[in-house]
Image 1 (tube, rainbow over the protein chains, first blue to last red):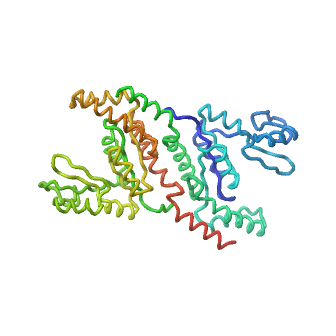
Image 2: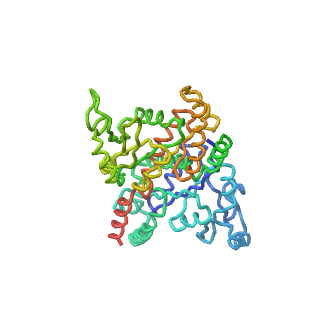
Image 3: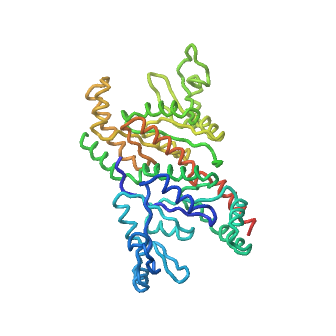
Length: 209
Length: 209
């Protein structure tokens, strides 16, 4: 079946839920199925990098103009360098029928829906809050204060869970990856994503009547 | 993940689209996954049949009382015998966590949603209107007038397609069966079907804060 176009898929969830790991395994387990968006950044280009492959490299002025023109789906600044997801590139990929997958923090994820109303929003969480805490502690990189802060953020973010489309419990990684893939593939059959196939069938049947 | 409860799944679509064949193959390809509802009927019990296995056998008076009490999801009469899908039996199966699948004509299918708002509605169609016509002709059992009538009904029914959740194109049977299974399994991860898991995570996180 020829679906209307590619989907924008947002993978989000609590810090420590394993979003990044799921993304990595999804890309390697199902090669060719999913496309990553390329971010724009003000960080200087490094040896071996190419503009438009790792990043779209922008000057500070160019980046600020993109912000002013509303060209970003979302953006953020770390260590003085800014990073953003350009809308236009995502739009272009979906027009080509490609499924684009974005890993975004909880607050930003819901904003994507304002721009792409048919975006598919997936929320990743560990099997329990205890497990979430253990994973944050297990990293061994954060102080107990930082861990408490993160859990407090997760508690606030949990109020937004019902606004997501699907809930993925990341207990056994392989299962979670398989579920994410199954959900995305099934969503292609949603009637709202097949308006042109429906319209065609309706007009063909009308011709018989 | 412990989902809230079993789902009510309605498989519907044009006459001649192959709903019955998909149902049969779904039941045999994925044994134990899906449960059929048992209809009530006024038809006399036959040798070898058992009340509550093939059908719930009812007298005309009992059946009419069930209609009057609104106990049917839908009902119809063929050759003087009435057949109906009892709501209570479907409710009971879903409470036990079982997925119940119903094959229902297009008009009746949407009524199921009035009673089960979370019912999953699947619309089956052939790859084209020409193919639908060919399948009806190919049966060799209907006159050309009946075929024209059926196509006219399909044309009217096609206006309801956007109100279904998913569209299944029955081109290669095995693929269609596999898609139906995938869609149902993925739907179990919908946030609206996991309200208790979400509520539990929210309360656990609150306890940390």
